Amino acid sequence: MKNQLRLGITLLVTLLIVVCCEPPKKKIEYPKTDLSQNSLIPKPLKVIPTNSAFGLDSKTAIYTNQVFDGFEEVGNYLAEKLKSRLNLDIPVNELDGESIERLIFINQSDSLEMTSDEAYELYIKNDSVLLNAKTAAGAFRGIQTLRQLIPEQSNDTLAEQPMWLIPSGKIIDEPNFEYRGAMLDVARHFFTVEEVKRFIDLLAYYKYNKFHMHLTDDQGWRIEIMSWPKLTEIGGQSEVGGGEGGFYTQEEFKDLVAYAAERHIEIIPEVDMPGHTNAANLSYPIFHAGGKADKPRVRTDMLVGYSSFAARKDTVYAFLDDVVREISAISPSQYFHIGGDESHVTSKADYIHFVEKVEKIVRKHGKRAVGWNEIAQANLDSSTVGQFWNEPESALETVKKGGQIIMSPATKAYLDMQYDSLSEHGLHWAAYIEVDEGYNWDPETFVEGLPKENILGIEAPLWSETISNSTEMDYLAFPRAIGYAELGWTNSEDRDWEEYKERLADQQPFLDRNDVNYYPSQKVPWKKKKEIYKKISKD
Ligand code: TNX
Image 1: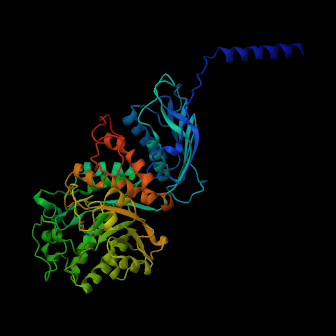
Image 2: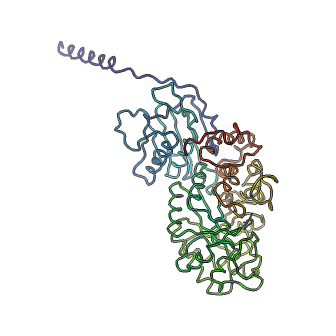
Image 3: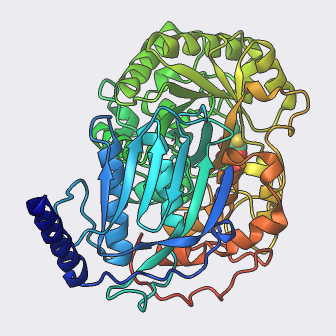
């Protein structure tokens, strides 16, 4: 008993010594925050503030699931962004550092309430950020939300080291549509691999998941086809305005596909046919339709509708089988876009024959065909997707056959339309699309009678007749592409221009940091005049 007492006292004393002699940990007094006031785009499904903060700082570590594919890569991606933007060296999956006090845990979980593969939950507390996602894609979307929550300024008084205070609370989120895309026309003007990657990076920040590349048109053929080398040797050497054009080798295309995949963005290749094929026909005149179609020659103008493949020649389909096979082999996407628009010099019977033949070739190579809305004239498999741009009846026809629709109405979603009559670059044959016009429509109701379950999603196409570099691309794409991201992700009842425009204005620091030459629309209450942010670093 005596011994026990002595032991008890010794323990107590030891404990007291330990407690009182450990250097006192300064309790951080986080200021009051409101997570619901953050300018997230796209707006999440649910945001529940708890009014405190997580202090992102040099004592933070990232830990990820290391069993499921892709989670660690998402952690590495976040660490890279924190390094380039904040100059913080945050370890990923190394927890032995003594100074680690806070954790961002990227966790695989099957028990989310939401059904989408891209769903995620974020629980932000004083000492941890827990990101739950079923898939790495969901985790990647959640990481974008976290990036957007990092404030411009660090707080340098709360601790010895600078801290970026992320408001605490809970975010539950998933996309409304599974297909949220942008398209870039690399045929009218060629864009380099670096320019395309930069665009993909910007789209990733706003949770896009599809990137459609319009690879061929009258003015240029931009993808190497080993079995038909003249397509790029001849067809790749021109563009609108007389520039030298260019093309992607298959290796370069694979590199782009991999780069996009790291951002959980799928590249959808398009070979536009039977019209828009002057460059291919110039390379191999044997496939030219003749008749009403113009004789192939180098085209640097912006006209459309004058070219066609010969729809009744068997050799055309043998050639296209090679093209579809080679591209499919380097393109993991389930989709292959066959174009099909504006074939004004192909007879209706020839057009239908052609589209049905090519759709079968695409399916033979294991892909789902996508085509511009005109393809509805043909008898198509229900797996084939129509891309609505100008004919509501065609979209309805596709749906009647059981097909799905991607919404890209030219009057609302075309990134190449001018903002107004004074804005630079762009065309206006469909409409002038100011930033509010581009936001104020509903993909679910735009085509009357189109059931929601047949709408795969939305895509904003950027045709490039009037733009030839990143600066010009930015001007047409931003800030409108940010709005299309929200139209694809956020439910329509949660969207409101008056509220959105404030959140859009808050994107300015991000856009400026990344040197995005956005159009400074008067409709948006920008906080600062353009140019005012100093370029610090990219994120
Ligand atoms: C129509 S939209 C086209 C393109 C042009 C675009 C210019 C569509 C399927 N075809 O060939 O580049 O207008 O806005």
